[in-house]
Image (cartoon, rainbow, N blue to C red; front, side):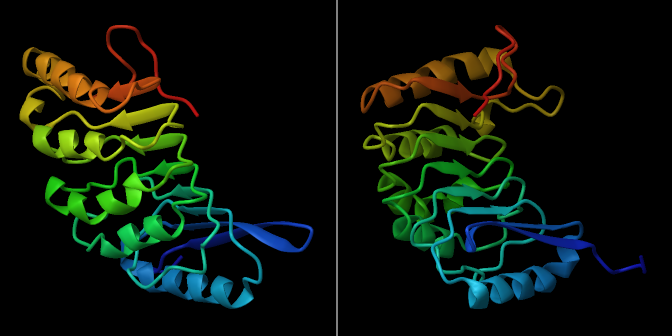
Length: 215
């Protein structure tokens, strides 16, 4: 492979000639235009609703949304979003609110100042059962706001959230003396609006019980 070029993979999964899943990976963030081209190609080919969209590498371009009105599973894990506007993602969540079941925003480096753009859409995702939001840069107040916006998501059975930045330490991943009471405070906030089923806040696997979130 020549230097400066990136390897791109676009995988489509179909059932009875119906495109149901689109997976796009790219091993270099510098080659995001090829991801855009792949999206545009699939949008032209798309004749039926897409159920699954997975973009696991490269930057998410704001204009790269096919017709996703019936999307069930959205995986943007480790797509760096910290420099991008999240308004298009918020609009997408509103569009698929009636069907989305899985939302994975793990490790997207989302900053708490960006969060407000996706909260209205997220709060309407009434079918959501799985929500991964770990490894993002969130303050305690931002996490409380996020948790309050999940009050109507009664079907959530598995959810993960970042440790608040106030508990992070340059010497160790989490300062447990600070984190433990903050986690308790976050759980109280959540229980004021709904009763969680399986939830992880902070590092996983859990140092105390060794359990990890699994779909």
